[in-house]
Image (cartoon, rainbow, N blue to C red):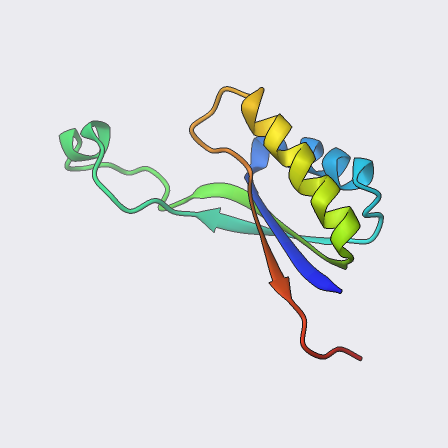
Length: 101
């Protein structure tokens, strides 16, 4: 058993849910998060008095599942990222679980 974590901008929430279902991961959790990027873009530096939000609305999804489902999910995420035009692709990581109850 491993823990898979996926982050996405809020606009992709429904797509990520479909990807989890297509990978046969029926049990997962999600949470709203604020995504942040460090660095200065031309837009950020040219507006000294920016009143924009401090982060972008994002979602974090996670599930405890097996390697086969995680491999399928990663394949689907890779395909998804190749076919969507964005500066915010889906991100995913896998963490091993040493113990669980």
